[in-house]
Image 1 (cartoon, helix red, strand yellow):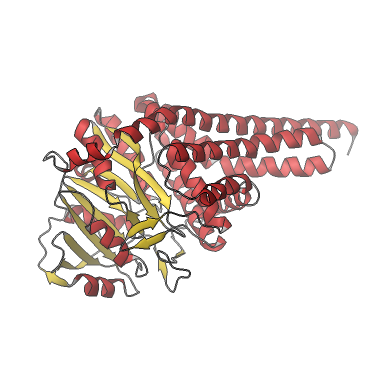
Image 2: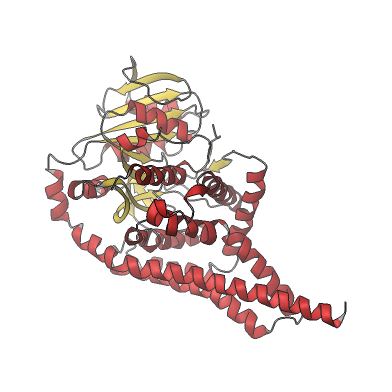
Length: 484
C-alpha cells in the first residue's frame, strides 16, 4: 500500500472513530439528561405515595374499575403463585382475566385444581379478531377470576381476547410470571384520579431472582449473586428509576412495560388492540397509541410513575438471555420500520421530534455503532494507527460514563425506596455496575446484531424462555411463546 493510500486509510479510520466517540458521548449525555429530569420527579412520587394517601384512595368510590389481563403460555412453574398475588391485591374494584394461550404443559390443570374452576357459557361481545376460544371458566372460590382457554396465537392475540372479555373501563396488562406488590395497582391507578387526560400509566419492574417469595408476595428482596441476573438487576434500576421517568417531562414516553401497564380500555379498542405481527407488542402498542392520540388531537398522555412495583424473573443463562434480547431488538426494528413516518415529523410533537429519533439513533443503531467502534479501536490501536491514549478515552466515554449512570441509579434507589435492606445487596449492586462493561455489554451487542439478520430473514419467533420459578433453584419446565 502506497504512503498516500496509507495516509487516507489512517485519516478515514481516525475520523470514523472520532465520530463514534462523539456518538457515545452524546448518547450517554442524553441518559444523564434523563437522570437530571427524573431525580426531582422520583422524590416527589416517593413523598406523595405515602400510606395515608393510599388509604384515602382505597376508600374512594372514584377509584377506576380495572380488569387485569394475564396471558399465559406454559407458565406452570409460576402461574399459581403469580395469580394468587393478583387476586389478593389491595384494590376495591377489579377482576382478573387469565388467558391460557394453548399451553402444552400442565398450566391449565394447575389452574383447574388450585382455583376450583368450572366452565361457564360465553357472555362476551367479540370485537377483535383472534384465535378460537375453547372455553370460559369461573372459580368457585374466587369470584373475581375469569379464565379463558384458547388456541395458541401468541401473547398479543391473548391480550386481545382479554380485552374482549374484560368488563371494566381500565385494563392492566400483566405477564403471568410477574408478581405485583399488594398496593401497586392502587399506586398505578392514582394518576387517573387526579388527571383525566391520561391514556396509559406504566410502573416499575424489578428483578425477583433470589428474592424470598411466599404466597405470591416478596417477603425478602435480595440481589442475585449470579453475574447475569445481578447485572440485569442494575440494568432494570437504571432503566426504570430514571430512564423512563425522565421521558415524562420530554412528553414522548414510548415504553410501558408489557409486564405492568394500566390503560384506558376505550383507547385500546379504538386502535384495534395489540398487533399480532410483532414480537414486542407492548412497544408497538404505545407507538401506535401515541400516533393515534396525535392524529386525533387528543390531549391524553402516556406517563410513567416509579412507586408501583411488580417483580419479574430474568434469564439466568446466556442462551435464554440472548433469545430475549434478540427478540426485543428485532421487535424494535419492526416497530420503527412500521411507524417510520413519525420520525422527525412535527405533526407528532415530542413523539416525532424527540422520542422516535432517539429510539432510531440511540437504541436501534446503537449495537452497530458500538460494535464498529470497538473493532476499529482495538485493531487500530494494536496496529499503531490509533494512540493508546485515544483508546483509553474511547473506553471511558463508551463504558465508564454508563457505569457512573448505573451508580447514580443505585444511589437514587438507596435514598428513596430502599427495597434492598442488607448492605451486602447494595455492595453487590455496586459491584455489578462496575463489571457490566466487561463482557455483558459485548454479549448484549452481539445478540442485538443478530436481530438485524433475523429481521431481514422474516423471523417472527419468540424462542424458548426457561423459567426457574419463584424462589426455586432450578426450572423443570420451559415456556415457548410462538408468534401469531
